[in-house]
Image (cartoon, rainbow, N blue to C red; front, side, top):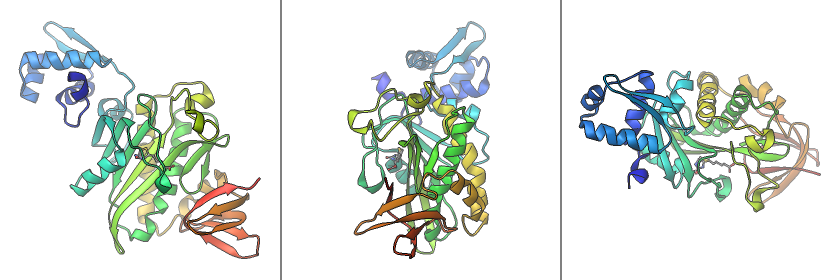
Length: 333
Ligand code: BTN
C-alpha cells in the first residue's frame, strides 16, 4: 500500500524528499514535524518509505536526517539541482504510473496551473503519439513528460513550438554527453542512425486569436536496453546507441534549460527566422528526396528548407514549390 501511494502528487514523502534535497545537509526530525504538521513516527515512516524506494537517507541522533543518495527518478528533488531556468520546471508533478502525462497536464492546465509546470511519469499505460499512435512507455528507463505553456500568440503560430522543442532537445542531448549527432526530422522527431530516439506531441486549447494553453509532450528513449520486436527497426535509445546510461533528471533539466531561452526569443519574434539555420543544419530531410503522406494525398519532391512559419519547403517533382504544414515525411530510397 505504501509503495503504491509514494509518488502521488503532493505526497508527503515526496515533499520531504524535496525538502531534504534542498537542505543539502542534516534537517532535524523536529523541523520536519513542524514544517509538515506530522508526528515524529510519521516522519520516520516516510523516511523508511523513501529508503525502500532506493533513496539513501542518513539518520544521526541529535542531527536528524540527510539525503545522501538519489535514485535517478525524474522527481522534483532530483531534477531541480540541474535546473538553470527562470520559470520552466518550477512545479514538477511526478507520477510513478499514469495513463498519459499529456492528459494529466491538460487537466492541470485547464485548472489554471502556471506556465512552466511539468508532469512527468516513470511509466505510462496509455502514452500517446502523433496521428493516434501509441507511445510505448516502459517503467524506470525513459523520459515521459509534458510541459504546460501559455504563449500569448495567435494559435496559428503554435505548431512552430514543436520545432523549437526539437531544437532544444537536440541541444540538450549533446549537453548531457551524448556524442553521436542526432538529426531532427520535421516536424517532431529526433533520430539517430535512422531510428527514432524522441518524439514531441503538442496539444493546445485555443480560439483563433487566442491560445489558452499548450501542452508539449516529450518522450525520449533514454536507458531502454531492448526495443520490442515490432519497434526494433524504427526506434532506438541513447543507451542502445552509445552503451552509456544517462541521468534522466539531468536530461529533463537540460531540455528545459535549453528550451527556455529559445521559447523566450520566439515569443518576442514574429516567426522562426532566428532558429532556422540551426534547424536546417541538423535536419534529416534537408536537400533529400521525400514522400509526404497527408490525410488524403501523397506528395513528393526535394526538401529545400523550412519556412519561417515552420512549414517544410518541398520542390515538387512537377516543378511546383510546396509548403507542407502537416503530414509524415519519408525519405525516398
Ligand atoms: C510522436 O512522436 O508521435 C510523439 C510522441 C510523444 C510521446 C510523449 S511521452 C510524454 C507525453 N505523453 C504522451 O502521452 N505523449 C507524450
